[in-house]
Image (cartoon, rainbow, N blue to C red; front, side, top):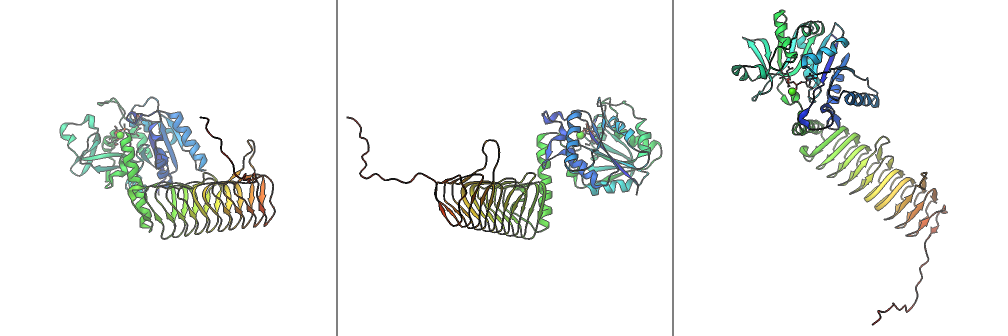
Length: 465
Ligand code: UD1
Ligand code: CA
């Protein structure tokens, strides 16, 4: 096997995005377009990955560097192209970074759905000696370079703007992907000229040069043309987002996941599912999420960086974001509707968390319940605790955060404030509307509110006539 190097062209302007953000940094499924291409290149075990930058180069390079650091993956090499004089010129900038042996794959930073298997077969066809280009049949070939043939043999690629009317009727197009042995690529790129309709150095001219040199040129057709579609506008970005999401949804369904409507499913990261998982409409998964056997996720949930154990149910409109710390939901737990779980929420088995309950950096042991309108932050909640509606942990004194410990079998009455640091002793009860500032003993009823007073025969003030 010859070594594979990858050059990703990403210097273009992206005018039609009408955005301040460089085009290749626009996001598809939560990741920059060019990140998708880099990940595909990495899946090929590429020896070198060179990204050619130009427009927005500082921003693109900074974003890709930060992203590589965050994932502990190698930072790609960058080659600056300034000014941008065409695709041939773009690849010329990368040449000093490419060894003389091996084969280079040329990819586009704004064509995110190309698959590793397609590229692998392109490299195989190139076989260390031929120029292998990826072609496609396009019913509407406008704008593309056309593949010119003599008999069966590829002769050249002519750009749309340079083509004759007869050539423009050709529906076999060049998709923008090719594999070329490095030595030949260097030789041919050195011979490009700007003698064409756009005054650019066309990468596609190397096909003609290869034929002149008697080298073999092969066109491999890609049937699944979504793989070679580029993003030039928000409309195209949205279309490719849907295509990508459908691809992911289909893969999950093939593993047995039941997705209510694959057209209303979004995965912006990794989702691992055990058997018999059901996902209702309009759910968004981000980061790393795992769903255990039989987990059901109701409609309109957003779930990021969470591990949800077997048999748990997430009811509709729940928002879960574990960020860097993660969220854990135990076996058979029930969460939502309208619950919010933040980083460090760690729910044991059979825990119930109901509507308008927010949990952050808190563990709830088996069978604990917080069913309505409550906040638990920086807390340890024991088994079988019942945490009443409207109760909160006052965990923040304006400068520091403090922990609240609620031991097993405690009952916290509604509308209580637990001012941390504080411990509620096991089996204790806190009367409704208490403001608890001191530790409470086990098994006791603790009440901390004004005593109820009733004044008999109370006369309300009367209006003066
Ligand atoms: C190119 C091909 C065309 C093919 C089409 C497929 C050439 C000359 N033409 O045309 O045959 O059918 O792609 O989509 O190659 N870029 C740079 N620097 C530059 C110019 C472009 O980095 O100086 C990058 C762009 O950011 C983009 C890619 O190269 O990612 C392709 O450039 P683009 O202008 O879209 O090429 P097309 O004219 O569409
Ligand atoms: Ca293009």
